[in-house]
Image 1: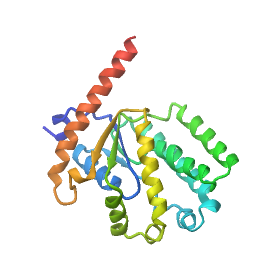
Image 2: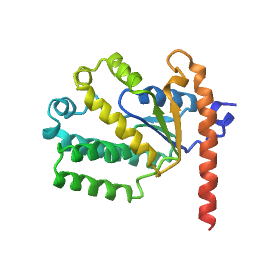
Image 3: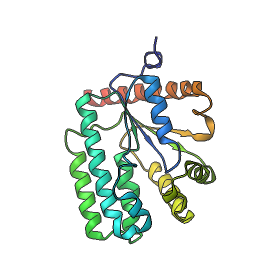
Image 4: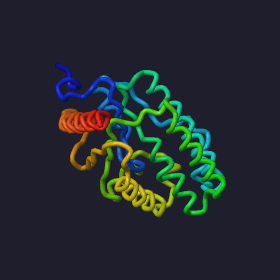
Length: 227
């Protein structure tokens, strides 16, 4: 029996990994995909033509960056729809609008017109049939000090040179966002409770929780459809 069958995780499941920068989303995405034999959907960071400019001038490039991410994520959503699920997704489209674009608008680094254009586009996208909502959102969380340490260890110069105040604000906004998120079920996991880099078998307790949450979610959806 494989791990997906062992923990009763349907082969068409869509699982999204969320959390602030540096929390370990990519590592978790790869580990879950390998364990379940699922496909991956990664955020396109290295090929993003706006990212480096953005970190040097938020006001000039925030709208361009967010539109790029939104377009790329919608293409990924369409791909997931066409494959019929079986995906682990690195960061959700909900974070783009609920955290990043909103933060830039409220901080004055994105104009009201640009923000309204962005949110209108997002709302139109999520209403299409090509937008499958996740069965489960796994939210990775840790202390601010742990996050800052991981950002330094990752070694991306544009992140290392970003003021700590930016990461502190991002951390707070993520906590507020997840406490009000209701688009799909949430499984919160503290990064201090596992170490996927050193202990591969630490994925199994996570899989057990994932299976439990998805089964609960699908039973709830079935009851709602019957009503």
